Amino acid sequence: MLPNVLEVARRLIQERVEAGAVVVDATMGNGHDTLFLARLVGERGKVIAYDIQPQALEQTRQRLIQENVLERATLLLASHEEIDRISEPVSAIMFNLGYLPGGNKAITTQAASTRKAIAAGLRVLKPGGIMTIVVYWGHAAGVPEKAEVEAYCAELPQRDYLVLKYQYLNQRNQAPFLLAIEKRVSS
Ligand SMILES: C[S@@+](CC[C@H](N)C(=O)[O-])C[C@H]1O[C@@H](n2cnc3c(N)ncnc32)[C@H](O)[C@@H]1O
Image: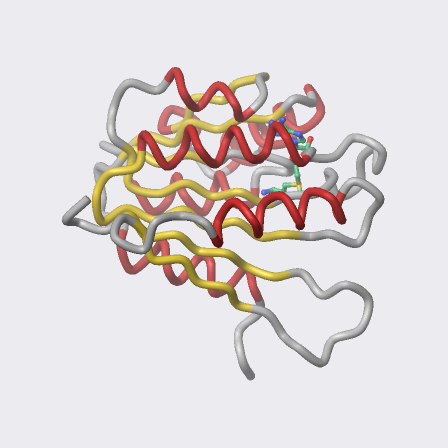
């Protein structure tokens, strides 16, 4: 079967990230992506992860403890706009937009802060590095966020970035899609 958007995001990251890398999970949620990244970077690597909800941080912390990889992660109760404080180049950044599954559906990522975080992420991304953005837009704040994110990504200069969109066209109910941005080596 063809892979879903999250599987493609993970494959693209897996193909590019080496053990020992520094990577970012911009939307920690229940920690599935943080765990995926922590395994990928190995003992010498580091995952910096953000969420604005204490519940997300705690779920993620427990998941990483269970898998014995907590020391590879820095879990921050902060908005992903703070990515601009990172001072080292990062190899990959994952965004998984929307609300916390099993949590308060009214607390979601938002157009303006998501755009700022993407821009900050692209500044700290290494040449050859990748950002993946899974856009779930089947909620009230999701529609303007989708428009903002797509418009921003579509305008990125071709000389500096490769931008991909992956989406099933025949799914009902506002099918989620993936945007993947590779920072070109020459930029
Ligand atoms: C779809 S969930 C992420 C799922 C997660 N990647 C996983 O593997 O379980 C989106 C998360 O983004 C968080 N979020 C919302 N606004 C945020 C912001 N400004 N900065 C960081 N996280 C935010 C929400 O609290 C929610 O937990």
